[in-house]
Image (cartoon, rainbow, N blue to C red; front, top):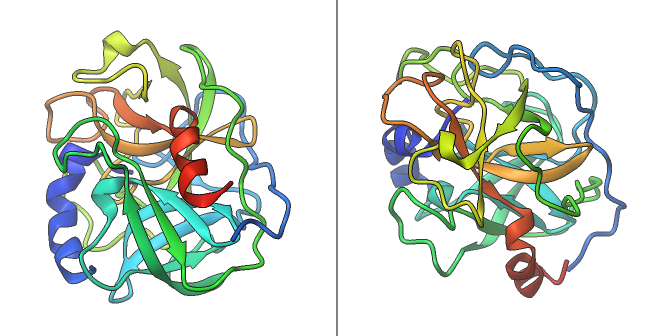
Length: 254
């Protein structure tokens, strides 16, 4: 899967080419218990994911996202393109299935600077509501040591460009929250440090994708918490979605 500083370079070509409230009740995402292999070093996602979103430009997957209401998807701010954005929602395969729709509005957090750093969160308003059940936002931010699951279609090998295209099927990785001290440049009040090792981590193409705790959305992939150009050589920084609940509610009403 993918992170942002490292991800950013991979996303630039894609971004250059890109540019009402829930009707269904939120569903719990399935979450394995112990740390295991996934995304880079990951395994196939099991279960149903009516809320998972693939953000696409010209039919190509670029970032992940999560449906939090019938007409709203949360993702990373650095994933927002300058042109037309399509989203495939509810399919474990980004090329087909689920619901293919478009964005009518894309809103980055007002404090996002466009650089690698905090407030890397955005909301995408769909052109029309979908019937898919959304995922609920967690009640509280996960503490260090909490088991979490990451989902995405990012690279399954650690070097940028090592795969010609994203894997077709959704991957998952079971890991945990680490202390903030393990991530360089983290803003602890609004970001999460996620344990990565042995090339088991989020990677290029996983940006914006979900971090799930006990069936609820707690984070969105942001960037690497280290300076190496390879995924999995250090911890990963996720935007803390729970910490941005007030801003999300002010925009969406959710």
